[in-house]
Length: 291
Image (cartoon, rainbow, N blue to C red; front, side, top):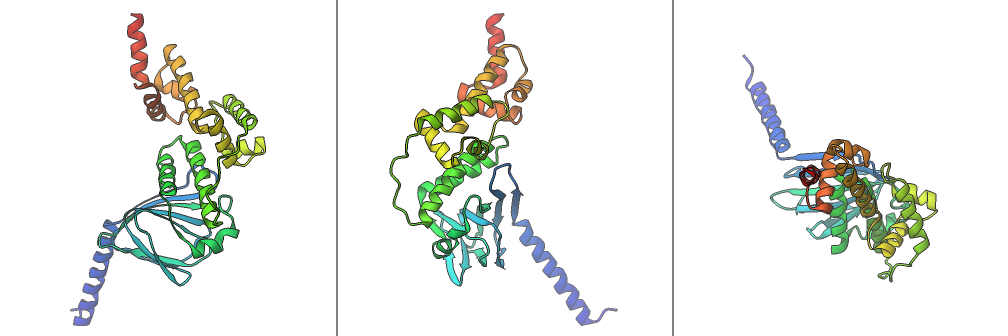
C-alpha cells in the first residue's frame, strides 16, 4: 500500500493539475500573423488569474484593454491600464503583468517591428508607456477590427500608419500638428496606381516605394485631396466592378475572385455596406427587372 506521504503527494499533484486546468478553462487566446507590413503578431486574450512573469519582447507591444485592467512593472516602476489607456511597451525592456481586478482582463495586442517604431523612441516609451488619448484608443481599436476581417489588410495598414504617426507625436512630445500639407500631385499618382491595381491590390509600403513617399504622407495626401482613404477608394472601385459583373450574370463567388476580394463573404460585407443589398439579391433584382 502507498504511504501517507505518497498519498498526500499524489493528492497535491492532482489538486495542482486541477487548478491549472481550471485556470486554463478561464483563459481564451487567439494569435495570428497578418499580411500587414510591420506587424509581427496579433494577440487577443482573456485571462482571469494568469500573471506574466518578468520577460522581454524583441518587438514593440501596443496594448489596449477592453475589460478589467492590467497591473505591470516596467523599468522598476509600477503602471496600470485603465480602460481608456493605450499602453506601449518598448522592446528589450523587462516587464510583467497581472490582473488588477477580480474579474481578470480582456486585452488586444499588436506586436510591431522597428519599421513601425524605431529604437530611438525606447527611452521615451519607458518614461511614458501609458497614453490617455481617446482618438488614439479609437484608432487602435479600428486597426484590430480590420485585422480580424480577411481581405481588409490595406485598411488595417492604412489605419496603423496613422496610429504610428500619433504614437511618435506622443513620444517626441510634439505639439498637435497643424493641417496636413496638400499634395494633389502625389494624391493623383496614388489614385492612378490604385486604378491600375484594382484586382491585385497593393500595400502602402509598396505604394510608398513606387512613389517615393512615406505611407503616412500618402494617406494624408490622398484623404485631403479626395475626402476618402486609399483603402476606401480601392474597395469602392472593386464594388463598382462587381456590380457590372453581377449584371452580366456572373455568380457572386466568381465575381469575388474577379474583383480582388478575399472571398464571397468579403465581397458581401462591403457590397452591402456600399450598395445596401447583398450581391445575390442585387443580381436577382436585375433578373426580375428583365423578366
